Length: 423
Image 1 (cartoon, helix red, strand yellow):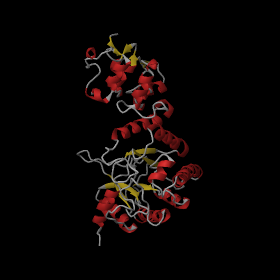
Image 2 (tube, helix red, strand yellow):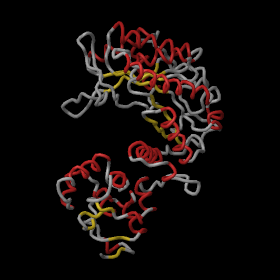
Image 3 (tube, one colour):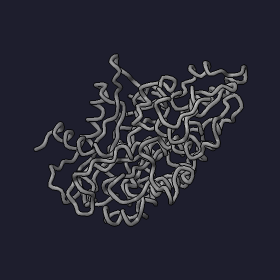
Image 4 (tube, helix red, strand yellow):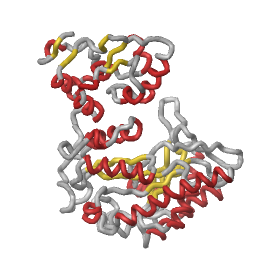
């Protein structure tokens, strides 16, 4: 008979490949009638003296699974140790860990037992125990199994802060090949329901202020990178559609880690595409916060992101005719296009120049990444860097391999780089 800690060791390890684990975006203070709270600043909102912050209990309900997805460690055909929590065990464990200050919330997923609906009913029972019996106010992120009925998705959404349906493959062909028990429709239907139910819930709250909130932190999904042949253009195009059609909060990218020997998958010896995953996250950030479109980053002639430089720098190098930008005159949208200038620093520039003409020395206090921005800006007519390099030299300077992160552009020996000319 397996004890609770043995189950936790197995099912915690089984959940490690799901990366959709983020800050909450929910502000639900404790009203004195229960335990815990959710902070809008993020689930990891309590730090210890040595800098550690408490986080989520990330676990599966069970790693038994009816499905046989090629890339999954918990697939039906794998010979692994299996375990399952009862709803009562998992609820008790979550509260025990919370009371010990180990965690601030729960991230709950599961293998598919019997059917998506049966599995979801077990997960809902855990959430009901936490919310109603223990009066737990902390953050909960619950996974929705593709194919779950709308009624159960709705119940989950009223109990959890964030819910998510893992897309995993961004084309129907790859989904059929690697996860044959799943269908694009089974994934899209709950995502569409969540989006429409959240909109209806916003209307309900306007009419009835004390209406319960449905999935207050929205929905997210995950795409596995490198297990199938899709190019970055296809992945980011799918991402943009998800943001537009389903109002997702986040799309997570998970570099494929070779776990199973399967002829449908890349060779086991192939290293996980971690740098590609990193570039996709950077491009995703540009789509969500910097007002870029996928068509500006990639096209059929260049379907993959440049691994040597980040997507924003790559765009800037293709549009050098737009630079340098004069920071005292550029509008907000233009500032966002400048490498090294983020959303917050762009706002600081706009606010500061209302009172005075900005100088280069003023930029140090605005958190600009000057090792990148310097090549693309002027400030009161003064160029940000010491010299103006040609395009090939600038690419070298911006590339990760150039070691830019360890020195200032003013410190580089530009005379040693071919093609650099003086002002």
